[in-house]
Image 1 (spheres, rainbow, N blue to C red):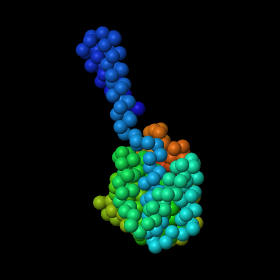
Image 2: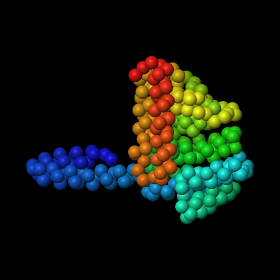
Image 3: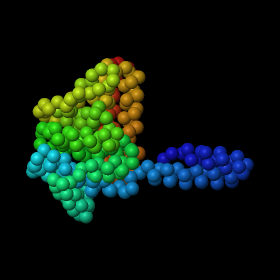
Image 4: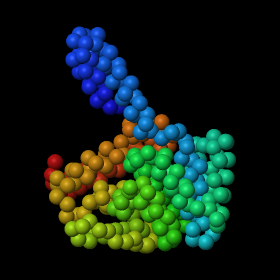
Length: 268
């Protein structure tokens, strides 16, 4: 939680009332301001992402022409991971079926998911984390699915390089590789190689951090600090435990990638 309101309130209370009790009053007012600001940055409800997420997942599964049994099992596995109660599970199934309909407009789900994140990138990355298992459920990456994921990323403010990093940390990096091209930071791809799924030791740590192999130590450190800030589980607030656990896992993956680069490059 921010302490800016408390500090400013305490100073103003001391200046206006010129005594200790005035400072306490200012601190209390500042505390209420901090609470209201923090609340405004949180999603309206911890599980309000369920309906748009599974509607988008249904559209995603249908985008290559048919919804396979493998994709249905992937959607069910996500419901299990989220430990949905019976009511939320029925809602998820209903929305998944709605998303499969030819007339469904995925832009509506994208808009709702964007509203749920309220501009918070840590929540945006967790949404992508949940969807990628469905994207890769059939083993190959269909162009239509990639197009829908890119549409969602654009709405959430997630770049191609960041999508590649999340994909790599999920273990799908062997089939979604981007090559850095030039000083503008453009990325090309994706690759569609078959894999076994990547392990931590085989994931490119530079892809995890969203940097090139030519990056300077100061840029590596900057990328690491930025990612750790974006993926810190303590900042998630009121979300399901599964999302917090995934954020903790991602923070460990980012830290492992950074430590590996430091060891290989020989800097501290």
